[in-house]
Image 1: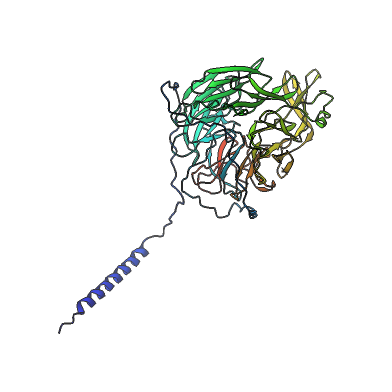
Image 2: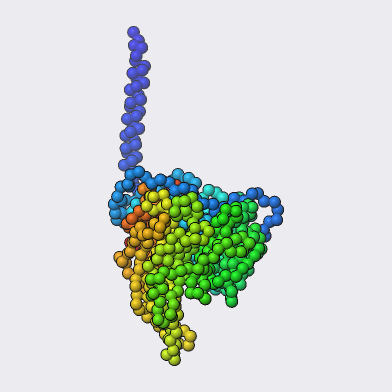
Length: 597
């Protein structure tokens, strides 16, 4: 009798014997293979650096019909969000350098640009982008220019290529007549997008990114100095020239946007001319001058454009020295060049009493860019601007909302003695740099934060017109950040660092920016110091979150952008002769420079 189950049993037994045979063979082969090491790369593959392209030639501004432009209109900002209902958890100190790094997320999201030198058209140097810097950051990548030395000019970043990613623009100079460059770099890895030679040094009037040609893509307009005073417009995709406007000597202040609401770009620039200083309005499509007017003195700050009188056309707000009065003059110009108002700075009675016998007066000049915010919460825009003696907030009609002394003595005297023993006293000042504004204490009203620098007397000995020695005396050192309540100018907090060596002329904090650095729902402050450190301070109370340094000098304030498309903020800064990207993660190309500490 044939068993119907027998074929099935034989099939199962055969399969078992076959699997066993394969298992034994696999073990034998595995034993015969020598040991090897496998390296696994975490994160996205490296992007190869393209061959640098040197932009040449000139692209004339097209006269053909253009599509409507998408330009910044400089309208008052949105209402600030309410603060979190619960206080954030205290952040522990950052891990040691040997701690296990965090892996960078790879998801790409729309990135927040930094189109103006102070972040936006209102010069507030503030962004709503959140970060994850709960500990000291790490270097993601570095860029050192193949030609020229990086200049202490503000950075700007936008989607120049039109591919949903950011490019950052940085200036360099070899300090020769034909040795100046602009570089556009991809923020995700620091690779070169384009390189453009320019016939001037970019310092006082850094780039602004906007659409100049109507093609829906960003271009850039920049001002120059160093013997060739020009405003220069470049194609954002190629770095080639669109137009240039020749000035007399040097462009010291500049901004751009759609000032009159006609959908076309406008450019406003100030010029270090002799014997008079001038301001001028240019057509953003062609560079042709619309008007110019004289100023009281030199403007050393970034102008602001916004509608102050409600007529639908913006006014241009900035300050300039008034040497005849030893004061700073604040301007609000209409688009035809006429003044809406002009205000001369007014030292307090206590400040006037500090006048030095050597000069018989006290000087109040300003190098701080005006910024716009609703400081008193009345729904109307206000203007904040600083000098080396005071920080002022004006209403839109020019009336003073409040004035707060900055703590500067305002008498950095320079005594110059020539080879015949004759001494000349020069009433000079250390430049007080730009402020930032946003709600730091959670009351729904923007506050102001700025850095202070040291006060001193400097004795110079001249020989044959050359300075052969310098001596610093009467030093009052300040390596300090001050935050003021936007409603009344009262102090919110002060932070001073004496943790690191300072130059012989004392400490100086400068050019803060505001962002939620650690992602806790509250705004924080990033600021650089001449002690060669970047500081992250909690916006509510000024407590230090962390500091970072690689031993080199910070040339200018950082910017806070989403460099890699992960939805979180990264830090870009010029340190020494390199542009450095700082991240809470460790992916990217590590620096070969001095170690972080």
